[in-house]
Amino acid sequence: MNGILYGIGVGPGDPELMTLKAVRLIRENDIIALPGVAPRETFAYKIAAGAVPELAEKQLIPVHMPMTYDKDEQAKHHREGADIIESYLMEGKNVVYLTLGDPAVYSTFTYLQQIVETDGFQTQMVSGIPSFCAAAATSGTPLAVWNEQVHIIPAAHRLGSALPDTGTCVLMKSASKMKRVKELLKASGRDAVMVENCGTKEEQVYRHVDEIPDEAGYYALIIAKETAQND
Image (cartoon, rainbow, N blue to C red):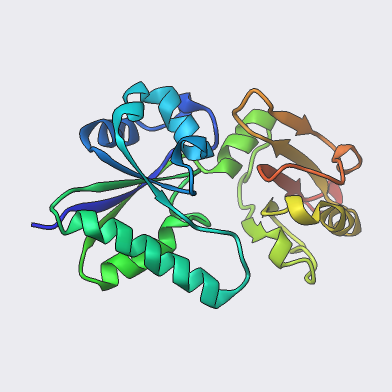
């Protein structure tokens, strides 16, 4: 029988936020795949190793998933990654793929899952705490109250559009375009909080748009609430 590919969310950064199921599956399986060329240097590995020290003794498989807008280049690396994983699945071995946050939210696992399932293999997602839930908790900001909507927006890809008039906006993938994102926030008149490196020793919380630096690290997330006038 073929093995199963598990896409496991390790949460946003704090090892204590990993689920019991994620910890159990890492412990029970020997093949651990990580997105990157050097598995031990990946953020996902460092998070998981904090909760599962025996991860260091596992067989670590690098899956190169470079950030590129070139669709052909993306497809090439996704196919190569799936081929690596499938070589173990065909031996009857399960593969645990570690991904930041939750595997259902902007995860590299999604691309591999689609290919592997199309090729006839079984996959399972294991939920992790999403970065925006952790950032909301860290900053003491409720994402939704009563009948509020929550909009999850990949900011770097949506800078040409105005923010929705109502509800809470979660701006992900914003670090590379932070100056323009701040302009968008100011134009919307929204209150905003940014959490950078949530759940790590380097965590920083900025509680106003004017406090947010123009240069931010990759792990930066913004929660923009409606202003009181629009409530």
